[in-house]
Picture 1 (cartoon, helix red, strand yellow):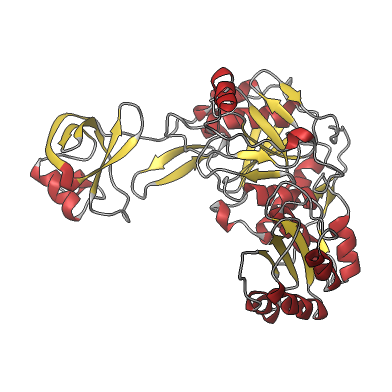
Picture 2 (cartoon, rainbow, N blue to C red):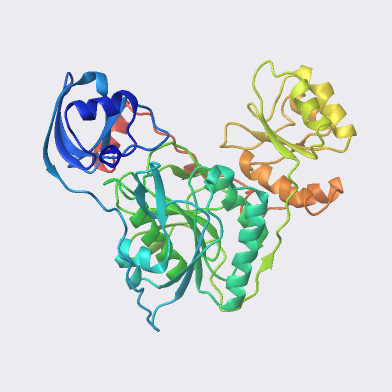
Length: 460
């Protein structure tokens, strides 16, 4: 009897029993808010007891509050099996060889209704069963390095990933795809840009904003775009490949040091900041938008620099910030601090003594701007000049997260602050640029006639 109500408890379980509805039933649910028709899904073991979950005919899942349910009727029953079919991935001598390294991000997946978690499909056979178009692009092999959420990725993962990439390049792979969760993908992209230098092949990070059991999932198309880039692109750099517009027209290739996740749920969440993307990619072609990039080569030479000092922090300045924030980091042994300052790179005067104390204890302190676009200019106002006199070093137009990653990477190699400064201020993979192009900063405001007209004509 318990199996009939998988995962349900409390009030939700009582409601199912009252109307004699089983999990996997096709049911009509009448509520005070309207009628809903769909399949009753199991609940995750840790979920609440106030909702019954239906999968609608559209493919979307909804939760129905039990207090709104007036009647439920079963009109069919079919237990679902969400295992992705597995097929032998075909090999072709005419196609290039691509290696997919997994870190735990969801690319193709099925839903585990016991826990509510998404289980990645990862073997070549599973991926081929889920996205058969991959066989038209490349010969794909896979290796799972980690199985972690992206928020749990950190320095040790970066090092292992960089070393694995180096091994694959030396063995002759034609391109590398890295499956990664989207939340911290830009951090890992920056880390790999510093740890894997002068690559002869494309290194493409990819993920999905929406899991593969959703009709609006971006997983399959992102994966096709990423593997096409790894197999065919002339751009031999660390890139992030994700949706361009919210439609399915094309993906964008973003340079690993200039990319950032800018929306919590949109499929077109990644943006190149302070520059334009490297290229567009669709299922037919890759179209470069820039000409200044590292080109694909036939040699197997690559520099792997897997270093990172974990005692580095990033501090987002806010009005009335107290000096004990800086003092606490120093007291806990931090060796580097990135400040995301206001305007051209400013903080309030009460923090000055703490910054001075930190500098005297040998802490490397760099200033970035929380505006994201634009450069640190600390010569313009007294505030900036005072901060530089106390040891703060302006970091040009490095993004705050990129500066954080780079400082950890630099301090992982040396404690000599002059050598750290040389590493930090030497541009690597365009983390610092001489100028930002006029079209590298475009933020359109909805509601304006000219913007709404543009959106109607071109993109949603």
